Image (cartoon, rainbow, N blue to C red; front, side):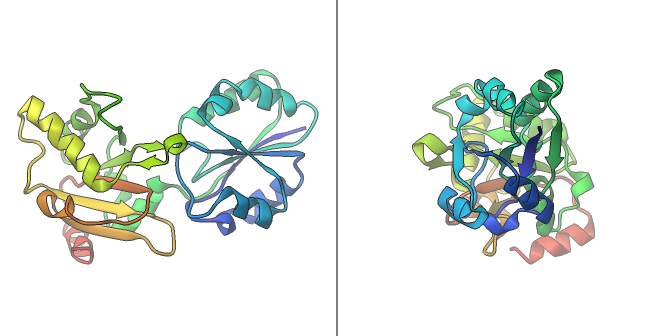
Length: 250
């Protein structure tokens, strides 16, 4: 029997690949990870389209319950659905490793990820440095990591993934992310984050109605990007072709 780790893409139930759908149809049980990102549809939409019962897997079920999921794959084909691409979120690597350690066959079925979807901005993908996450400060009041990553990337672009708390239906906005960076700047006083800084805000990349806006930080933090998920890019040194593309989103 096999554990299938299947990427769903970024938008809705129709973004699954033909290969992924065929594999899912063969499975006795289907899990949907429910904490690393957000689709533009409900789990019920997936269940109806795939004609399968969907079991939601929050962080505890996916991480602490990984043993159970892998054990089930000893006797049946099991699908574990991941929003975006299976390994864009490193947490799912542990599920893969556990299955391999227990000699359970694993098949990875890839799909679109925010890591590549940001290409629509016109920023060249190979010029992105280390990606970072920005959590809510009430969980990490002395947070400095995203600030330090932006600083270390120097001339490279920095993709900032924004906090998602599915259990509380709380999703960080571009404006809130910028406020977090400004708070860190207030503590560090290194003049890395300031009102005139060029930033790119994005919402619902990969969907039918993405929003992309570029401009000075002081202007972007006032912009309403609408429904989640959002992400933020701090551009590094720009090629003239990148400058021309960013003008489209000004």
